[in-house]
Amino acid sequence: MADKKIGVLALQGSVREHLDCLARTEGAEGFPVRTREELARAEALILPGGESTTLRTLLRTFDLEEPIRRRILEGMPVWGTCAGMILLAKEVDGAAAPLGVMDVSVRRNAYGRQSESFSTTQIVPEVSPDPLTLTFIRAPQAQRVWGDGRILCQTNGRITAVRQGHMLATAFHPELTDSTAFHRYFLSFLP
Ligand code: GLN
Image (cartoon, rainbow, N blue to C red; front, side, top):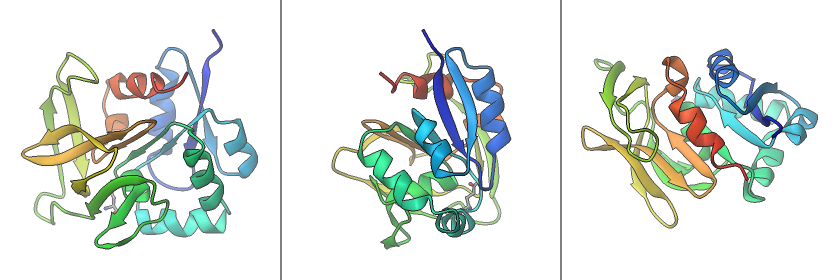
């Protein structure tokens, strides 16, 4: 079977890390997405971590916000890591969010300064039977999930991964670890 074409939004953030993981994921062909034409080639899209306010500005500058939203609403699988989760949520710090497609409300930089970055090891049963390293970098917290949103993972009592049909949001960064379990899991969203 042909490799699935997985676009990685390549405006800012951990783009190369996701592309590296996809290169190690059987059945996936990753490529950067910066234009509408590249978006049109993608069968699924990853929104990387970075800085969500910058990403939001760049999405508009590159004229990608509406086309991405439309593709997601049409059913294109999408996965946002960290800042990507912020882009997907319907509510961010009580206000409307950039793409606003997932039934999730998030708080940015929710872990505060002292614990801006940390890693922990955890089993996420739906993703892998093996313990996975979850890396949080100035991460958001999902505070509320409603509608079709389903909590996939909680870490220290906080919601850290949510799935809603063809949409996935993780507050942590699987692309910064050796494991491709999350990339393989995301690939399973494709027909
Ligand atoms: N703190 C960043 C934001 O609010 C997200 C950090 C990340 O993606 N690692 O956009």
